[in-house]
Amino acid sequence: MSPSRPTKTSWFSDSDRHVDRSTVGTEALVELRDVSLRFLSYYDKQYSLKRAAIDLMLRRASPAPTSEFWALKGVDLTINKGERLGIVGSNGAGKSTLLRLLARIYPPTSGRVTIRGTVAPLIEMGAGFNPELSGTENIRLNGAMLGYTRKQMDAKSDGIFEFTGLREFADLPLKYYSSGMYTRLAFAIATEIDPEILLIDESLGAGDAAFVDKAKARILGLFDRSNVVVLVSHDMQALREMCTRGIRMKHGQLIDDGPIDEVIDRYLAETTAVSA
Image (cartoon, rainbow, N blue to C red; front, side, top):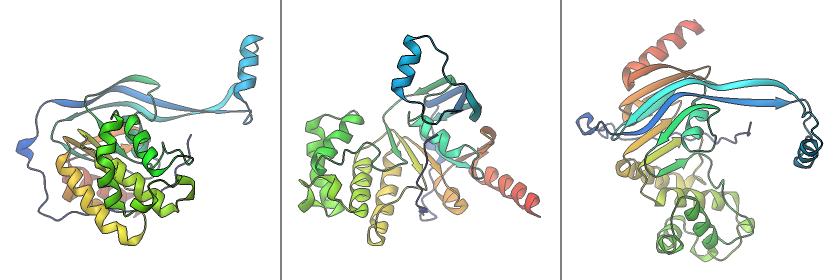
């Protein structure tokens, strides 16, 4: 499994920013049918691609997995155009894993995933960056990964550098950027597009403190421009304000689905009962 490097950041909205439920359509932009995802652990942690190729040529048996872990199990989910979906659950419940599967970072082990539309995953900022390339070149590279042409990304570059305040570093290789500069550029690229499906993990970082307010405003603007929003957060108030529908994950399974307030209330009631 890939290790995560979360930086806790909660996103808030004004209480009057509820999405009008009457605008929610019946067009399904996301469909999961009996989707499961398995991770394997191997005895030999040093098992290399070279050894795997040699074993294949010599028809030798590969090391057997020591264990398997089902991060998602039999998930059925449909998200229609206009829905703002909040995902709740305890740590290790499968929330972020589900988000990464929707972002096509993980392919399902079994089942069917259908995504209709462009996806903007605000999950791990800068995952596709090349540190040897300049800021401008990484804008083009990330745009290509998102399906945009060089010309389209060049047209967006001015807005990205204006927002981040990194214009003077546009031609500097990314390996010389500070961590804050790196994150700000990644965030700006990811939020410059107008996605049909927006995926947000609260663990994303937005750089230094002075940048946080600008980042929050940009996120809320992106909310308004997206056909579907899926948000993972431990901030129940933010979920109540920003989402219309909620689902709850537990041990990799989807165990509750309904209006966001009802899902949160049931989750908190069970959590309180367990801790009492």
